[in-house]
Image (cartoon, rainbow, N blue to C red; front, side, top):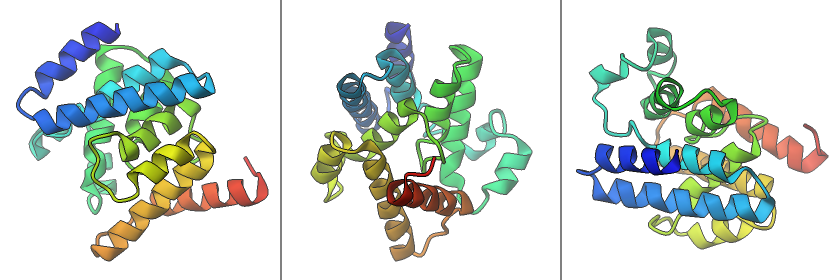
Length: 189
């Protein structure tokens, strides 16, 4: 199935070579993380390949994938629309695995109690080789030391970046940050 998905993604992103390079970087990085920790490599690979599948959809086309309620709920943070749409595309086209769905759906700002599949894709989205963020190498190294700490670091970095740019922060993002802070501080789950 990976080969079929890869062809689909290459066709979908053929006019966006930088995005395709990014997707392939997330794929390769998340597979390394999955192998290191013993996670399900196929699930991680599928989610990584499809995570940005809907990145360049028009706002109008999001209505084909994102419910009216979701459009309204996330009107202040529309960056999430592509993740919701890609997750629903996965369900319609390739399968119904909840871990793959979750990894695609929550790759933008995470979720509380993420599966290991979702964590691998989430952190890889930050530290894949084509990323230009200053702490990319640090994130990559932490991913192989403590994946939950890496998840929290990525979430906090996103919050700081949004605050710096005076962009809205979703209440879900803040909930995720709080969850992972408590998890790492108190071992709660």
